[in-house]
Length: 140
Image (tube, rainbow, N blue to C red; front, side, top):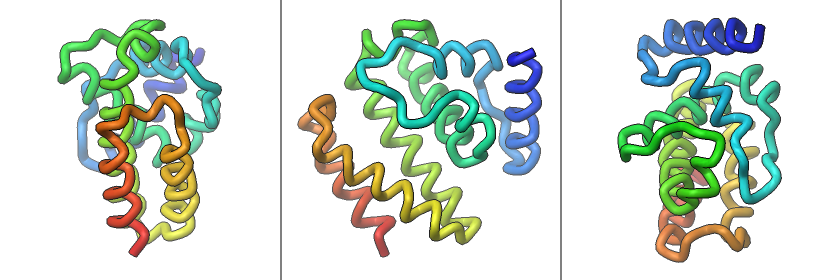
């Protein structure tokens, strides 16, 4: 049942954006339910019901796969720095998507999340500047 819903949501988003995602429903589900080192702010249900969050996760998974990682239930805890890099890349793409749709409220909401990363003990030191850059770029 969940696989059908996930596949439907991926197809709807692909059609809307005119972009194919190199992510199977199984990979998305595995990633959304994967072991993590902190509590997730958004549930799988939240992500599937919000096209910005869904887009974010799909971009993040594609990034991980391009870096040669397999989507497993341990991919996050075993590759924290790569996952954070891909998370920031996906976040930037998500914000561009929201900007294209003129969704200022969503951008403001997500920039608050981005700001909180500066206090995240798991943020790799070398990614601090990237977080600051994203904040500056989208706070305009």
